[in-house]
Length: 556
Image 1 (cartoon, rainbow, N blue to C red):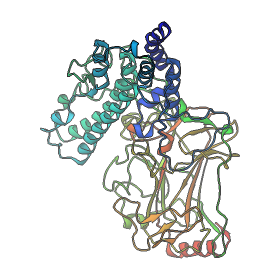
Image 2: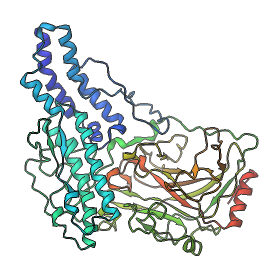
Image 3: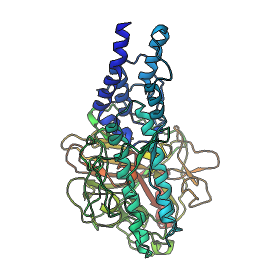
Image 4: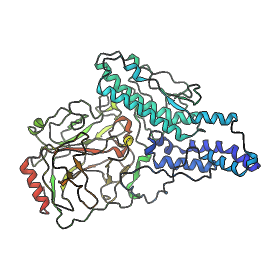
């Protein structure tokens, strides 16, 4: 009996120590929706449960995955994710076996834990302040208000994950401070739109700080930092640790200050893995009889012209900074958010064969240093900091279909691959592939590769190769095309078109010093990689490519 009481008294202490020491894994969980919680966070919480003496069975809740994860040879097996209240469950198990030692359920401690378990994140309403603005109906303002709501919901999920025994410091470090950093970027965006419309943005000051309200409707505690003062300038972004000096620095935040005082978060050290620890995991379906095995390559340079902007003509036509991150472009020289089919067809191209198609993807940056766009939308003002890395090479290849011949792509066909918001949307449309030269039979979907010295980082953006035969685009920019099955066959009602792959390589120093541009709330995660393509290839050149592919030749 004495042993059991001592163990019960020590368990909260050990839980707190374990949670504090979990570090990287828990911080990653602090900026991750529950549906996408990382293995690192799972492992950290599992360690916490073990240190606390939890003995109950864990509830396996693996995150969904778009594809089988590559095996990492030297890594421990992913632990099943424990319940956030595993130590409480262990207490209940002890009490079941020792009924005489059961504590009253209505004790002050139990009531306190109950209130703490029901806590929610409470944030000042930006929507109320914006409602009187002339820009209140602006589409970008509405999108960003919705994003603020999603951020709060995700923070509530992270709070629930920490459990009822989490300390105020843990809540500040893993919930409130990351949320404040995210909110500051979004409020900055709303402020820029409001300023352009002539609205007085002083009402937006001090709206980034959130607090915790307990289940009994009590006080708002803790705040992100006990010494923190409200931000006087809506364009000022706090560091993820709140600036008060009381929260533990987040190893996953990697903040970098912008000229306006802003800060960005991500990627995490856990977002990188040594490619040599990854086992070969690439399987290519065999070409069957009646299939097509040829290839056609367009040589369009590596953006030596410095063609960059933060527009997205496919997803946000007619909008400046529609992507909120910077794109590299090769091919068509006209491409911007305001391009039209006519302007693209009449433009020059960087492709040596006269292909006027447009290809674009988010830039890669070295995170140290200050880029030329540090004070511009899409760059530092949207949390994308550092110097842009020019690709070492860009290879644009069209391949055949293992199960059938291919037909020509229609002119102005638009295709996007991957999901720029897959960190928060989930992996359904994610299609990132990262590897290193010399190791291309090993690919990573949600990690950046650390390549050996002399090896280049490689991004592979593979596009849908089945077309519905009618439409050049669709409302969600996806349903008019589809990926082929594992055997190469297209879904019913679709026909095979050349399978485009954008292969981009980079010379970067070994180690975790680089990251993709991304929407601020996506935290520069590698899983958010994506590519865009508009077919403006002259009809004769497209027919040449199809003939080459179907006859099994290598052209270009």
